[in-house]
Length: 134
Image 1 (cartoon, one colour):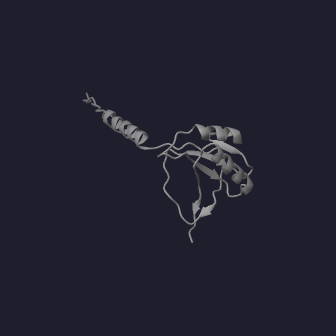
Image 2: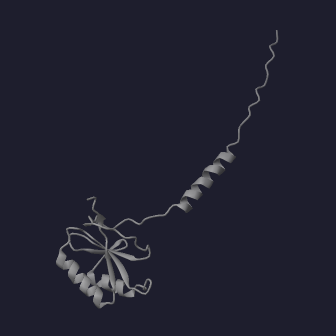
Image 3: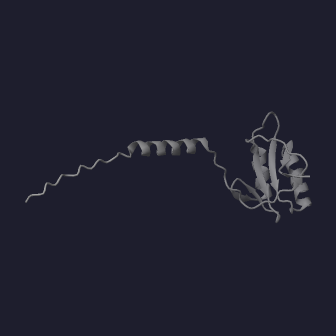
C-alpha cells in the first residue's frame, strides 16, 4: 500500500521591510538626538534663587573643590584657561565665558580667577548655579 505524502511548501516571510524600518528609526534617532560631552570631573554647583537661559555657544570652564581647572575634557592650568579665554570670539559683542565651579571651591581662587579673566578682556563670567526650591 502506498501512502501519498505531500511535499510541504514552506513560505518564508521576508524580513527586509522590518529591517529597513528599524534602520530608518535608528538613523532618525541618531540624527535627532544631541550628544553631550562628559564633564572632566564631578562638580557640585552652588544654589541660587534665579536661573537664566544661556547661549549654547558660550565656552564652559570647570573648577573643582581642589582648585583644578578643566576645559572641555582635559585638565588645564590657570594660565592655559586665561589663554583659551583670551582667544574666544565675542558673542553679541561681549567676551563671555561660563564657569562651572564646585560649591566647595575656595572663594579666593575664584576671585583671583575673575580678576585675571578681566585683565585678559573677558567682560562677563556666568557662574553655573542650581535653583533653590525655596
